[in-house]
Amino acid sequence: MNDIVLKYNQLNKSARREVNDFMDFLLNRQKTNNHNFLSTYKEKIRTVSVWTEDDCKIFETNQKTFNQWKVQEW
Image 1 (tube, one colour):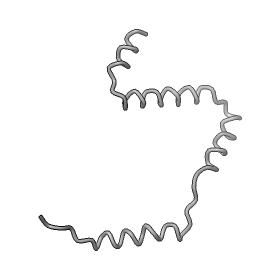
Image 2 (cartoon, one colour):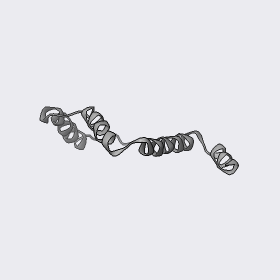
Image 3 (spheres, one colour):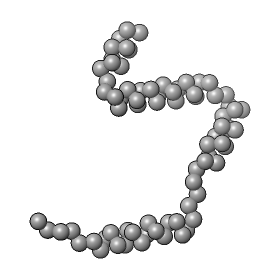
Image 4 (cartoon, helix red, strand yellow):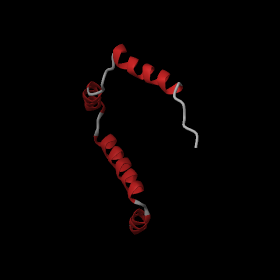
């Protein structure tokens, strides 16, 4: 166990956050049973945003104007 702590302490802040997130993922997967998993998944999927065609048109317009953009020369 000490070697894990030593290795963890050598990581930078970003890497520590990634390790913590991965451990949380493993713990959540371990706690979740199949019956509860489906209801949890349904709740998570409901929070996903839905974009209409009008919402996507903004990106298409921006893409067209971006491709016409002239870069300044130095």
